[in-house]
Length: 431
Image 1 (cartoon, one colour):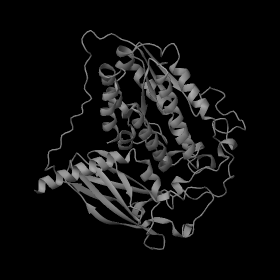
Image 2: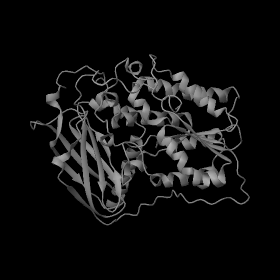
Image 3: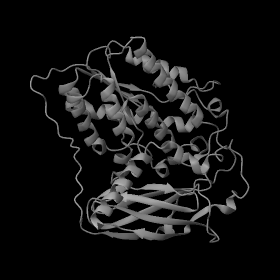
Image 4: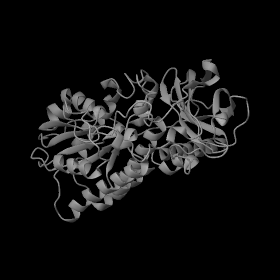
């Protein structure tokens, strides 16, 4: 009976953790009416910010390796008042025999649940930071923010938002180590997914691989140039480098007085899909624009972009103007905002981990619902023991397994799928 109960616990927490990667409504819910820039709700002033110095761990449930463990934090103010509202942005990593990033659930009553699955027993150090409080991590840019920036909606003038002190970056318990010990496993939990692959007999190189996106995507494109993806499986590999719009060296910081134009983003994606290189059988586009949108546009605008992009891609299928390339959506990587040299600069105010998580969760959910395959690189990047090289970029080896997965994907699944197969993929994607 006890074993059955623990297996039920594992299944429930497994689905909770995976669901959190696409559940954008739950990310937004604690701050649903508190994201407008310059508006301060009653009782949500600075005096009621949480403090990592006074907040406490109030409950721990540390399980053996192979089972989900939990830690609960009670947020408190700097003058030690217990918080009864949500809206804090806690970030948690664990380092020991293995490394991982934890999933944090805001229970909207001042308590935060830290959920994590450790597979290697041993001693671990829990590293906790409070990045934002009072929903400051999800605040939206002003309506004219993109116009005030350059052509990509960046580099706004320093100081136009006034004094910025919302980014806290406070270590829990003044940075004193918080250690846990993970016992040896007592349950057998098997993970059947394998990244091993072999070249099918008689395989013929075909198609073009296009990695479309910002500098994180560009780095992925360069990394696979020496891999089997580009040397054995595809005839050609190309990189389509974009910020908000296509990146043109020497012109990336040009100014204009125009607002965000989503039609240009969509037109450029179709332009690449319609290029001669991509109009060959067996082609694949790994698609994601990534980290630049949270800097520049509000969430509603981004939702409209993704919905219109999906609609336009589906419309070409309905009109039988089918692109040869298959599209796979790649999620955004985890970021380390504190490593950016300008992390408190005006133009970077809205580049926050909570906003990036919100944007990514919505896009992933929408792409899954539309039937596109998705590679979720966020957990891989968040768990990488060396962290980022800067605020967003990683060593190529951080995504080695993902590159191997793409190789397996090419040899087995890089073809149009019928409706029944899509339905099966959809269930797996959103679970």
